[in-house]
Image 1 (cartoon, rainbow, N blue to C red):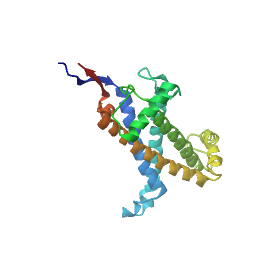
Image 2: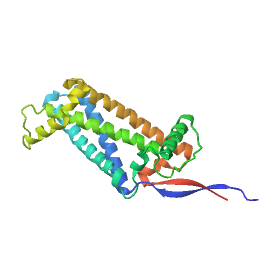
Image 3: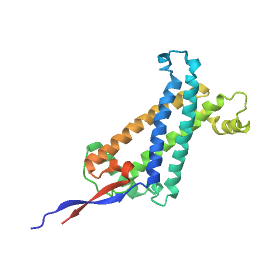
Image 4: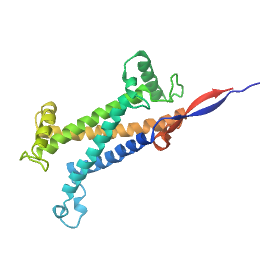
Amino acid sequence: MKTSRESYVRIKRMTPFMRVNHWVVAISMIGAIATGLYIGHPYYQTFIAEPAVDKYVMAWNRWIHFILAIIFDVSSIVLVYLYFFSRFEKPYKKLIPNSENIKEFIEVFINLLTFNRVKRFDSSHVDSFHVVYFTIFHLLLAWMLLTGLQLYVHGLASGQSSIGSWWPWVLHLATDWTIAVTGGTLMDVRISHHITMYIIIVWIMFHIYYIVWRTIFWREGDISIVFGGYKFKRKRAA
């Protein structure tokens, strides 16, 4: 009598460039959050023997925050580009609200809520739920970029920068509308920027939970994707 047994097929999910870009985003995000928290509330300058002004603590935090934000945003823009033009896979196809994608989204969501191991869709590649919540992440990043640049250009009150007056002009043109949208004052922009940071932190926590959840319940090695680039697709063999 034949008995069925489970076997796995190795599936490539991320290229080396995609993995490097993922970790650049992750590390930059952690650094930007840490420095951003200090800018909002200088919590560790009291641990420094000399006055903070002599050590340029705030200046260094603002500079590091700005540089990390640039790296963060450029890496994220690369990811958005890959959404549409990657030769490896094109995640934007999973955003199309057709019956297949909607059904897949609902099934993944129900699996997540009910801790269900049953899958009636192909989990070897990116699913619609995964793409939707990553799209939300990129929209949050875009908002952080716009509000952050508005706060930055506010510090260039003279209308000049080290690279000329054209740079503040461009920033005002691109981001002044965020003041009206958030409530009418620069403080409203600052509060929105700060709140969005906490939403991103919640997103990070859910992202880690979701990947660990998939690894435990579906047993396909999803957590190894960002390290080795591969996961495993379960199949049944007689």
